Length: 481
Image (cartoon, rainbow, N blue to C red; front, side, top):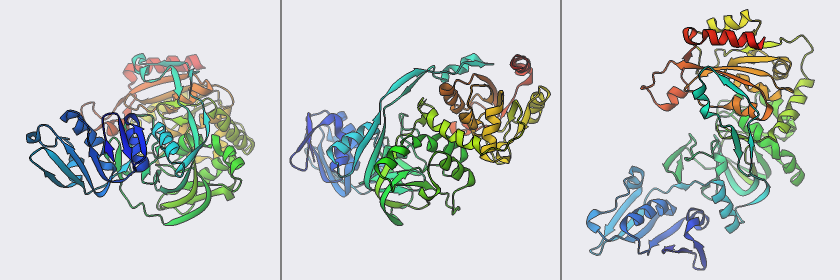
């Protein structure tokens, strides 16, 4: 591979624009050698070296000349330094570097589509939903209005696609690799500036290494629809991320009648949970079409759909069709009994994070106002769906316990208590497409502002401030009736 100022030449006869460099190098790499023949200044060459070095195979060589050899190679990156197994320089400033630790290129969807155009043997684009923007249908009130600025008044959804990948690897925790490229379907938050998955060790923004073995333990012939998760068998992630890929299931079965759904298992589990079976079956995936795995597998044809729900970026309005399909099936199976018109969704002992430390006092306030305190995990999924559908007002602590709101057939007031450091707007995104009015009560985190990492503060326990917000809450409950 030779780089010049306007283009790149790979495999002799392939000339491509430099603006698509990462996709191109991924398509035709890894390379035995890369030569930077540009007349750029040293700073530009250093940046290009960092961007392209990991497109070398193991023991591949990178050749470049810098104008100030006394300055050396200054990429300023420990991962890069660790990967250079040998380096040589002559009197003219020509450097020869050897890559001793290859890495996998990470792709965004736009880069992936470029790659598939160049390498149709890797995969193909099957169908696309257009980009759209719409105003949120959620009216928001809060005790601290300035904190509402993180809730986007206009939701923008990128173009979503269904793609097929040939001979790809599905590894645990939603790591998908095709021809040594990490597919964008690996990333739950793929709209963010940095692509991250906790089972990948990032080398830099464009490359990563898998923390485990990518050696497949099983070869799967035929067609499989990807329904895995970075956090497998977790109720909240099933309800938001996995369920939101099922917009493409009917299209997959139309094209491939024998396709099955590939679902991730935790390493200590041997089968799917009851709630997973209930949700997927209600969504139209027959039990015999579910194929659970917990090791890396190689798949002949892998179908992958971009999700319609990505926190904190967007929820697609057409996702309501999937939710309604699942909700109707669950409600039809719910027991017939009296359901309370006001419920407070509490968090039980199975939730180790984001506990309201004076929750007992808070729940007493709601009970005195006629709310029934419930723990959703104490009920079957169909009964949970009916509880939320029949309730006129739903209150509770932010988190997956409130995600049953997606099954409600009518809009209802939602009272949400959460730490002001918890910035996952799942309930707001749900309400943005279903029209639930949202009444937020921001609480003080137990984790001090100056202490701990961002992740710790994100999951911090919190305290409801009765002195500051007690009057606000009482007034709100009177208004909601």
